Length: 625
Image (cartoon, rainbow, N blue to C red; front, side):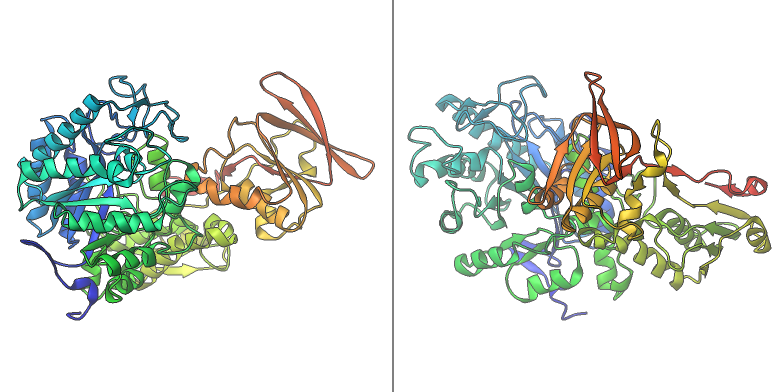
């Protein structure tokens, strides 16, 4: 392991980073009252204990009151933040992990009705598509105030004992000055590239004067907006050279793209079904040309890719943020030669999508992430060993079996199918959702390693369960599609599950009705449309698939919009009847009570999943659902 590229130290001025893996700046939305209190600290300390070299907190901490957080960010403009950041930093330093923070002013990437309801400010009046507020164009006195706000926030982080900070410049105020698309100021801050970069270098110069040379400074920035009329890769390379040549920064942290729309954001931070490490070569080009310490992270979710990123010399530090949300002990397992035990990030992006809908970041694969103060990542052994029977091998059943085995219990699992997986095995039939099987594979492998006994192809009746002499029975049988939600004609519909499993073939003219708003109907619609059918995707919601959320919706829309698919929101399917060989679907609007009909040859419904209940009445004293 001594020759592992990931485990080699990196020297940045006086600071030695003990390995090449970092958490890039990200906001899990755990602050309380804008402060990184107990949960925020515990989240970072858990990963520091396991050996990550650098944890970059906040994504991003707000430097000004007119940069109101939209993701429950840290408020770096308040003096109260200093002791909280000091506590977090000291706790991480105890484990040899360096701590930095990302500072920003959001510019137009926020809303006027957040925080103190101050006007949004940017370098033009152009609003951002995602947050929709029309900004005030910054005046000279605004710019001088903002420079002071950045500097004061940096001083607070220096006082808190952090090792350094980075300025955010992709989609936020800093690069809103850089881009011709979002900078309509006159000189000296608008027009030429020199003028558009002036604000950045004035901020960096003022910060350096305030915090001194031993406090590390960097910029996390986009080297190519990938937008017509924006700055391109040539401009990005020029900016990279200028940042190095300024002598004001100690590292570059490179991304590629833009985040002002959902599709743009998803390309910058790719999700499952999208290529791994899509911007690594781009970051490597900047590293090679500029010859300066370069950080990068974008869907580098596995150790092999991270190791290649370092061994190839493309970058100096590799960001594995979502990977560490799935498994905070990733680096410890690398150092101990236990890579096969790493819980993989499957790219479900539940973490980020929750943040962008105003929630906290949780991991669909690891329930303890974001709950470090109440739920341990390391399972302690039980005081008394018991015999535990689990019925079902979906994610819930396998997790119950894994945790019980970790605690030292004897575990027996029954499964009616011939392999584990439950509904995840069904959703993974779609190519873009195939990574979801990592949730099942990891749990099943860990259970096997701990001696859990599995019985497949067994529909566990009460006699089978009782024959195992259990002390505890955990029923994790999941559910089945709701097939009785229509006023009439339920028997004429097929479910999204039927399409995903291949039990039903796609029709030619199909109504896909989605009331649950999750992945099932979108997956079914894509399968049907790719088979050459005409598809109408209908939902009673005012938006498409709200449970799928923004970033996961992007790949579906990119696929469905180029096929023969029509989208009809705010209409509800009420019934189906046969007429002359066709199916006639009755639909109505909750808004206007308008009733209409659709003549099709197939109706596919997604009314959600109903739990399987009352399977084992006699076992209820033993069971836990």
